Image (cartoon, rainbow, N blue to C red; front, side, top):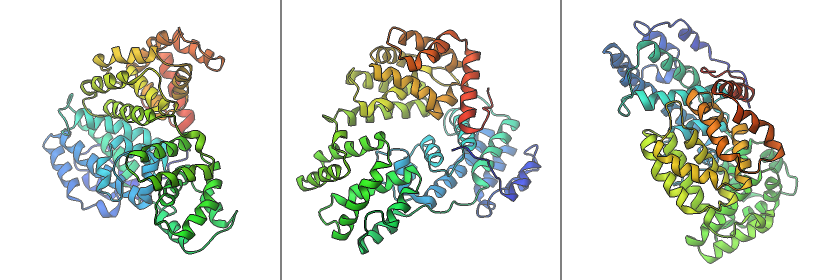
Length: 438
C-alpha cells in the first residue's frame, strides 16, 4: 500500500517557511485555492501572534479534518463506512461524518487510499498533539512556535495542499444500472467490481445485501445480485464474511420475518451460512470492545478507559471468534498504553482478560503486533515498549505456537530500545516511512 508522496507545485511555498512570524501569506499560497481566504487561517495567525499557540493548533486541525471529510464525501462516503466497520447511524453527508472520531476518519481515509502511509503516521501524531496540547481540551502543557510550525506544516503537507480525489465507483450508479438491465455470468460489470479496492467491494456487497432483503427490491436488480454476488463474495476475506453474518443476526430484533428469510437466502446464495454465529454474543462483544478502543484513542483516555475495561471483562471469558480481533486489540492497546503512560485503573481488568485468552486469542496478540499499523506505531514510543516484557510475562504460561515462538523470545528478552527499534523497522517495512521517534 506504500507509495511515494508527490506534492503539488503549490507546496513549494511551504518549503521556504522556517518560522511563522511573517510567513502566513506563504502558508496560504501552499494551501489549495478554495481555502486560501478561509477566515480560520486568519484566526490561527491572530492566535499565534497573540501567543495562543494552543488555540492556533485547534483552528488548523479543524480545517484539516473538515477538508479530509470533504475528500471522503467526494470519493464516496458509502465506502468509508465499510472501511472503518462503522456501526452507527447511516453516513450520507459531511455533517454525518461529525459523528465519526478523528482517528477513524484518518484510518478510513488511509484504508481507501485517500491518505498515503506517511500521511497516516504524521496525522495520527498531530491528532495526539491536538488532543493533549490544544484548547480543544485542558492542555497538558505549552506549545512553542517551532512545534506549532511543524504541526501546521504537517496539516498542510498531508491534507490541505492536495486537491479533492477522483470519485470511486458510485454505488448508486451501479444499483441503477443493475436495476435497468440483466447481466450474465462473467459480465463486464462483475469484472469491473472485482477490479475495485477491497473496501469498495465490501461496500458494494453490503449494498447488495441491504437491497436483496427488501420486500420491494426490483426484480431485475435481485436477479443480477444472484449472478454477481457469489463471484464477489469469493474475493472477500473471512472477517468481512463474518461481518455480513453478524448483520443477519442483528436483523432479528428490528426486521420482519420476510426480511430475515431473504437475508438467510442471501447467505445461502453466496455460501455464507457457516459464518452465522451461534448466538448474538459477537455483536455485544464487538460493541463494547469498540467503545473501549474509542476511549483509549480519545481525549482523557486514562480516566475513561477503566469503565469500558470493566464492562468488557464482565461479559464472558469465552470470546466469540467474530469479535476476537477487536477484543484483543482493545485490551492490548490499553495494556501497553501510549507515549504518555497507561490507565492504571484499567490494568487489573486488562490483566485478567489477557490471562483468560484462548489459544486463538494469544495468536491474535502476535498477529496484531505484526500487522496492525496503529499498534506498530504505538510501540515505537518508549512507554509502550517498556510494557512489552510485562505483556509477555502474562502470556508465557500459555501455549505459544511454533509460528510465534521466535518473536515471543525476542519480545520477552529485549529491552525497550530493542523493542522500539524492532517496531520502527516493521513500520518502515509496511509504510516506507521511518517514524520520527525511532
